[in-house]
Image (cartoon, protein in one colour):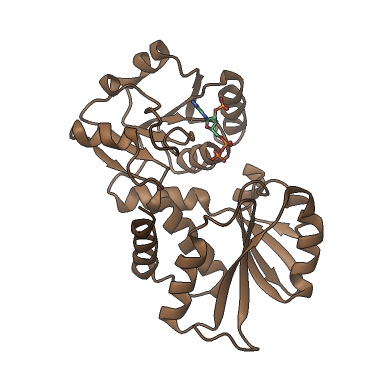
Length: 287
Ligand code: ATR
């Protein structure tokens, strides 16, 4: 990659940001298409978001990804936000247009594209979402918007599951949404009736973490999706594999949220296979 005085800069702001795979994925795409862009990480602490966002147009930075812990905090600094981002109250992508910052959220479409690519569209299905944080919200809103029949949100802290249920019902009232805790009995009661499980909790990020749902509650007809991609194989994914259950990890969602952001910044179709290869190679070299 050759950086010149004309190269357009895109960044990712987050804390921590050093483990992000987005620079590798996007730079591979720019290079492949010969686009004069580069993508750089900015480690931005929690209290610095106002200074940083004011400087973005001044520095001629043309776009940003926004990650933990800033996805909600950037909203007051934006000139405009997309319908999805406004509904979720969270932004993961910013495009700079004539000094105006426009916020989007591509996490939901990233999830939808990933399950569709895996041959498991959510329309008409009963879903069990494990977790009720930021990632869960993106998945629940996207799945409700794509016509899931029924969504059960199970969370360790029940109040957060209930709150996400209420927020979702406000926008998608025909979809049946339930909130439960993550106790064994609650999971057992629901497990037989669902078509897809999506783990959005952080259980599995650390090697040795248990699965968020006991193996004996899983049945053959399920599709299991763990949003964790590093490590690529969590205990939940191992259980799915052992039991012959269709499954995917979170790499597809990471890839497709990136693809959607790439399109917003460059008005060009993302070279998805090039981006996927860059992610896979980086994850493999991490092992
Ligand atoms: P993200 O943005 O990745 O969704 P988050 O908003 O911090 O991250 O949410 C983390 C989720 O993982 C929450 O649902 C959290 O449950 P609580 O709301 O009860 O905290 C869940 N989580 C984290 N550690 C967990 C654990 N050991 N067991 C079960 N759930 C866990």
